[in-house]
Image 1 (cartoon, rainbow, N blue to C red):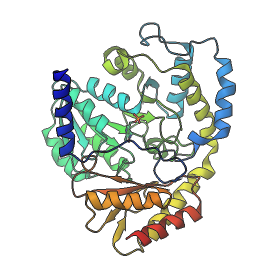
Image 2: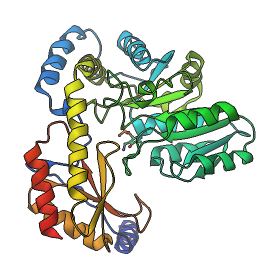
Image 3: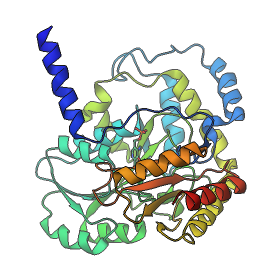
Length: 377
Ligand code: PMP
């Protein structure tokens, strides 16, 4: 049909103006890219445990069969949410279908018309999308800049919210959570923390940074995601019981969708049961990240962020889009799965290679990557 052809041409024209990204499969490369920080997604122990545990829930349907407000709720949801709340030291928890959906569901519903939200400019797209759907007014503040936030707080009207990540997905740096909590306390602002990249890695049992810093009572809500260090899928909002009740009734991203399938809940339950014992992995991955950052900073012509977390950004001199893409392809040809992060994911001029370290990376792999980077420059 002509109509379809014209529309396809429009899409192709639009695409031609942009830096198109493509889906890739990269099996066999050394993983410096995935969010499987502790190796749970590839853990045979977890796989076996899930298989065994699934039998115990064979009385439940495979799929949720509906929205949780209709046919989709069951005892495993309720049981899981109690465990999650306890683990992250909140009063209650509510599961969402992914971290993206949790942020959209929370931030579109909680701040109301007349309220004000201040969010870190480096916040994940899902938080920004949630705020776009909210009727509250929102302002960004400079990345990790408490002073800037303090100044912007003068614009506050109504109920005030401050939205941050505990570890930033692109920068790999940590939010100054204690300072933020103090400022929020003084300014009567409710602090919301996305723990996506901190869950599993911080705290005695991998509870996240909020709990690691003892801030659970000063944080209004934590967003816990399961697709990264937990090796699974889904997310939860942890906070007061009334928040859970509120979201069940007002969060459209919760209400108008089918709940998580049983196997996802079983995977989650099993991942939580293994998480406390991964202390060695937590320590190992941080040591490796520090080592990699130090070695990379000895190379002339690149700059690596300090290893505040296990996510590192490597900036190249004159590292524009084309050069970074080419360099990442070179590293992939050398068998290292390292990806460039380009605009618009990060602002123009801040394109970088993103290197993620895992507990299962060996010292030889790290040193091999350092050599390959030095060779490719
Ligand atoms: N929040 C942050 C900070 C993230 O980095 C991500 C994933 N990139 C998400 C939320 C979304 O989580 P999920 O992948 O579970 O949708």
